[in-house]
Amino acid sequence: SQQGEEDPQALSIQEGENATMNCSYKTSINNLQWYRQNSGRGLVHLILIRSNEREKHSGRLRVTLDTSKKSSSLLITASRAADTASYFCATSGNTPLVFGKGTRLSVIA
Amino acid sequence: DAGVIQSPRHEVTEMGQEVTLRCKPISGHDYLFWYRQTMMRGLELLIYFNNNVPIDDSGMPEDRFSAKMPNASFSTLKIQPSEPRDSAVYFCASRSGTGDNSPLHFGNGTRLTVT
Image (cartoon, rainbow over all chains, first blue to last red; front, side, top):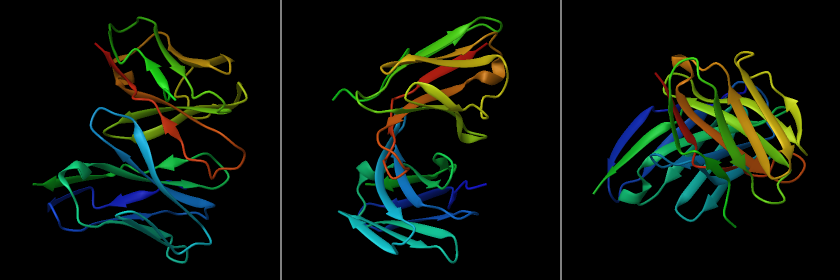
């Protein structure tokens, strides 16, 4: 299965700290996307990294992709209370996006 | 742009009843997806459409589930008869373009409770 699996399942940090979440997958991919889900809401797209890219930045977000290890990481720098949410990776190959179960991030003010 | 609109936001029904969930995708998007989210199984893809045509329904759990997209601006997911194990949050998402590099746009979901 292409399904990504996030690690850790839950993460609690203090405001201002960095948060790192990891994603592993099993098959070859075209791209990997990260999404955020606030409680009671739908998922929101954060960033996409293509299979031929190794690193991408967007604001306080930094995503890396290592296709040899079939893994990706999402770093949120200088976290804020508003970053509290669940974060999902999703992989895309020959089938539509398949999501992992997510990392629940709690940022404590 | 109003985004993907789902209705109702919450649905509580008794086992055996028919349930219909509705979705209006973003105008111009030619792909529409139905996902189901539970704590145990995470986000599962149920079915997706391209230009109103069902492409892959292998994720639909049973014959009790059916989905239609009569036109580009409307889709329904029907469960008949409903069972308690169908309780979940159902999401509709849409995207545009060919290939799979376009991000998905999700609605805020329908929380279904079957008692």
